[in-house]
Length: 118
Image (tube, rainbow, N blue to C red):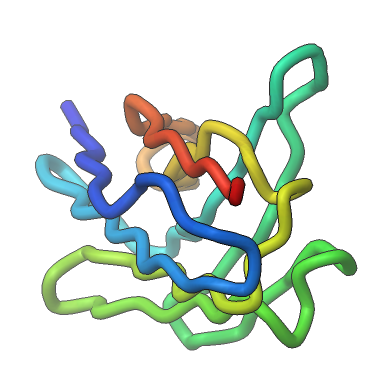
């Protein structure tokens, strides 16, 4: 089984920064993709960014230039540096892991709250 443990959420003022971390443990196979989704109250969960093991990324347009994802493959850990935060970034952020070996599986973290407010 696989577990994803997130950390780093909190309350920040507009224009501030936060760094989220997500550590995956258990039976993790390659290839795999890790990433972050978010869900604001009353809205559907949306993709924020994905990162492959080779470092290639796919960002939500509204966070490009403000958020940066990185990963440490040796530690199966992914990081999300969030700068210039806006109130509309307020949401629960979920870490995700998708694998295709031995079968297609998708895992979620428990979620961490990010609140951007003055």
